[in-house]
Length: 426
Image: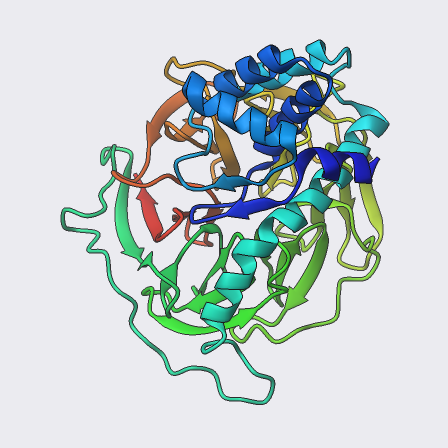
């Protein structure tokens, strides 16, 4: 099966931008299957709908797939409207005479996709890795000297809050590049109890450390062939979710630490760390697992989204609040699924659409000290009350928030591809 899927997707040339996302790969896999079956017209139709491309471009891309040639992914190729993409995926699946993935099929598809993403990222990673080699940490060598990164003036015209009555920008730093304090594709951010800020690139393996004012302190390198999906800090270390596995590092230095006891070796989709030190993880697409600090299993909830929704979800993000409640962002469902600390379903928050409070293309979820739920969406950071009522939307005046994280003071940090922005909520 892996060979067949790889044959359908071929080798990708990646020039600029980011590698194809999970959803884009799924659509391309279905389009390639239709083309191989001789159903070229529908392959072109679904490609056009999903990627919003012209008929000429869609026809050329499908013909390249049909011939087994490479596709070039750049920053202009990616999907803008996630709803159109998911509609195209659904229609393509029906055209192939299949059903939307669930259960074992979802798990196999996730494994396949992870393997393909590994191939996809390789080209981008190679260039990034060699570009970063001059600043890569070497065991036994002193860390690079502190350096003030190119600043974005939070009080000036560059980065402001789109809704200052709700949230004020109090810090913003970073710019496009590969030097200290620069980013190419920043999507994960975390803050420790000393106020240090950690920021990780999606691919290439670089994790940077900054002080509370946004000045560069140091960095360390993960495996450049893998993708970093999440950073999460606790009192004693920082956990990094890297392509299915969780690794642990020392706060402030990035020195490797022993892994937490009791965790499986792989299969992680996302994770969050509670105030009690417990680790809540998503395994096998949408199964909730909670582990104690001693490695004991505290909670399991299987099929957490598909048991509530009419569709499974292979793209789930997780957050926990101070009481231990669990919030799952189902990116295919465009909703947040709220579970109690004991695993009881409480509420479904948000829906797909373009009206205020609805979601179109989501990236991450976080919960503040008051139990309010924050969803990073293409339309901004959408905020809901603890009972699920829509409250308001805010965000940076430019750029798009991907990863979200709160510090101990209740300030919200957002990873925005080439910069980090810190909001103070009002």
